Amino acid sequence: MTLVPVVSAEELAREVFAAARGADAVVMAAAVADYRPAERSSRKLKKEALGDGLTIRLVKNRDILSSLVLEKSVAGPIIGFAAETAEGEELLDLGRQKMARKKCDLLVINSVGGDEGFGSSTNTVTVIDRSGQVVAQAAGSKREIADRVLDLVR
Image (cartoon, rainbow, N blue to C red; front, side, top):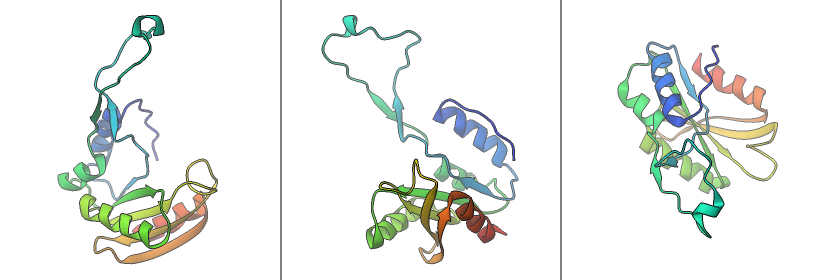
């Protein structure tokens, strides 16, 4: 594994595409913002100059997972993640909808919030394939879940 630090979603996209070419598998586990500020400032925005309100215009970031699937430069499977604030059947439905849009090989769906997901050392996931069928479920530490997901790739 090689760690490549990035600051923005644009940098992440560039680095992912460079590293993915010919890869045996790609696991897209980064939680990247869907939007970014349309304009960047090289200086601190002073509240005295802005007044009582500030409006920040956001623009959509490139969908790295969907773009990677469309490029078809990865030799092996592409695994995506879907972090949702839902549970049960609603969670699975949201995952299937995301799979229909992203068209990756496997999608790891997890509920975030409460005592699992972001900011927690444990999680529970369901993995679906392109057809939306459940191919695995796992619960435990994030390491245990990562091992289970990687078992599906082998």
